[in-house]
Length: 605
Image 1 (spheres, rainbow, N blue to C red):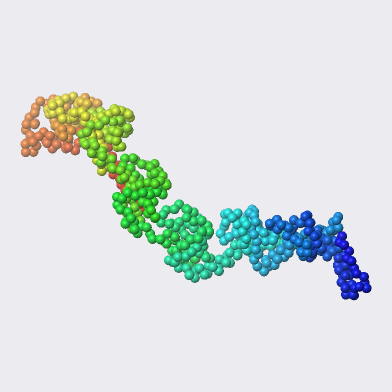
Image 2: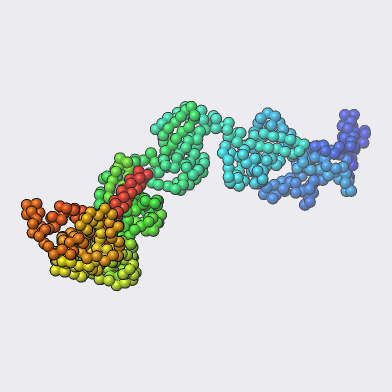
């Protein structure tokens, strides 16, 4: 209870003064209604409470913590006039419970309601991240939805905590205590004002300053002042970059050039690399053919590796130019992205901005070395490294394996498959037959180490001699007859019997033993003509009666009767020749495919 006012005696007071004292005493004795806001004067400041004269018979009591400022100090002094909110009537101590915080809050609510009604802005500080947005202190707590924070969606809302902004009140409900704010509405209004200014001066070719607004996988959006322009990743640098974040971050200032501007759609295309000269314009002066260069591997494809040599200059090392000897299925088997490598300039096309490089050219072609080291006729030793149906590959201790074709394994036609006579790891001796460095062919022969049985064919199987042989293969026009392990002859259908044979399969069968006479020999073509119908004839008059004008030798006469030159020496040779033709065709197709792949690679580059 406050001390009673010491009222002077009536004689000492005038009527006016006495009225004022009576009115004041009346006011203090009027009942105070809970929930009202009144003005009071601070009478005392204590550790736990602040006592305020609220013009009532009892003073008001406020918890001291309501006066603590952000720095932790008690911001109140005796004599201060403050507005307070009446919470309860007198308590057990005879004091009225009042609150300064509630009075301030109610006053702020009124101000916010007025701002909302008049579409005025309020100022506040973002204090915390909550579900769906942020909490803003504008005197009372308000909610800022994530979609209303900025003009574009923001992924990291936490970065706004502690920042002070102006906001527009877009929703207000005092009863529920709900206030919803928007910063975006304010920014949109400001942006529209800037946009009209920017568009009035925008034109292709001009350089303009901007701020990185957003970064995507394909480029960056630059705020030019009220309007955003797209800086595509391909227009950021003459060099290859994987992601725009390698060069930019949100909020970064940059100077760009306007490439295209569509006023109707309000779309702006920007470029950064165009602010500097295209490095390809001087590529031919900076790089020479056959020059050794170094760079970093920036990309790998199925057909090669792209090497970054300098500012904006990349060259392609095609997979075929990586190694002289290795069959590389993918460039990753030899290099990786980020590797520093050396290469040789093979071709420069400034018009199409392409450069072909080679890595294998850094070393001398091992095929040239091989040709010098092993001339034809050289005997070599090595290990069987691989076996195929067309021959065996022999490792002679060089980078390149030699191929001994199945036809050069043995003079014997009985060797059908290389696996019949050889196994991986076998140590063999061979003779160098031919080295074609241009076509990368290293041919070896094993049978050449022995004498050629055809060199003594006249002595062993002279013309007119009769022998027993085995039919090894039947053809529609004749049969292949095996005379020994190495020599086969051809029996034409017309030489089987005196009478005409229409179907050879009716008179002969494979594995059948027949007596034959040698009627022609062409050693250089490895051809031997045989006859069954003449085997029992001792009469050589036919040979003596040959017309020297039409045929000077028996071979010529036989070739007149049947074109033996077009016939293979044996079925095995026929198959081998067919395989050789197929292999050459396959090789040609591979080269064409490689050519197409390289063309496609250069086109893509």
